[in-house]
Length: 180
Image (cartoon, rainbow, N blue to C red):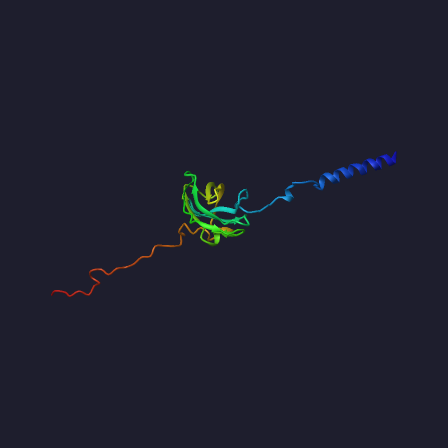
């Protein structure tokens, strides 16, 4: 009787151990996990990684991300970027090419200026068109130009910048002959 109890406890312990050790496939520890506020797109030829709109103030900001060409044989070029005409009304992307297996970090190249009606904390839709026929639409967060994102909003003038004031000579300052 004592032997049955020991065997039953051992079998229960073995079953519990198998369940708790996560044996199997496609568990969360097998998946890519980037802990950041930016979002990723990995379904096309070009991966768009850690994408976000960095904003110093509402309604204007800079889209930053890293574009990675997953093709090992073909160059892929960004043709244009656009908003959904609701939150993002304008995205001023300069076309660029990605060599096979190459990448481009927009945070290092001043990003893509965007404007519209949005505030930090909101998510906005931005679409990208590539010369290989792929279109990508992403729902990206608008983050404050602070912390890891500090200094990346180059589209919005900072509050510390003030317009330069120039003085011009007035009529009394000029050296004009007087008629006395």
